[in-house]
Structures are given as structure tokens and as C-alpha cells.
Length: 142
Image (cartoon, rainbow, N blue to C red):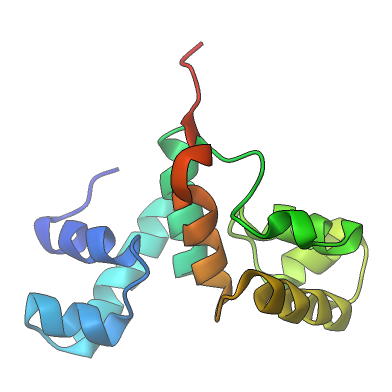
């Protein structure tokens, strides 16, 4: 992936879950500039959201976490299906299409997942899934 130096700075902060406003303060330029850099990153990575960029980053590095983040064992079977799709970075609409449910049902499950896992956003779930403790393993290069 060919990112400019500024795009790389934004990308490095983006994959940690930092907001665009905070990225702008850290790097020292406007939120509008950060949004433009994010748009370029999305285009170069063929991604539609920060969540998808984060998932692609960790998947591209070969990270796996078969058990999920701590608390994932408390999820119901339906919630686990949504969770398994969510960690790939796809949108609510795409999750609904993949599991053959309405977007409203997916939102209901996402609310329950967030409550059970103690998170505030779908991005936070994705980041914690790939960065949660010792259950992270690198896939062997085959």
C-alpha cells in the first residue's frame, strides 16, 4: 500500500481507534485535512469505514483470535454470528445480508454484544478482538 507520509501518520493513529478530531490535534492540522487523508486511505484500501481499515490491518498482519475478546463466551449463538461478521469490518447492512436478518435485528444484537462486552462502539469491539491479551496468535506463513 502506497501511503504518503501524512496518510501513514493518520493511518497509524486510525488503527488505534483514535477519533479524527484527536488525530488532528496530535498531528497538528485541521479535522478537514484528517478527513481528506482518511478518504484517501479508504480509497487506497478499498474500505468504507475506519472499522474496516482496522480489521484489514490486523487480518493483513495475520492476527487471529479464535476465542474473541474476553466476554465473547457470554454471547448467544445469534450474537456470536453477528460478532463473527463484525470483526471482519463489514457494515450493519452487510452483516444483515450475510446472516439473512434485518438491519434492526442486527442492531438489537449489536446493542446486546456491546453491553455484554462492555464496549461503546463497533470499532472498539474490532480493536479489542484483535488486541485482547494472550489469545492473539500470529498465523504461520504457509
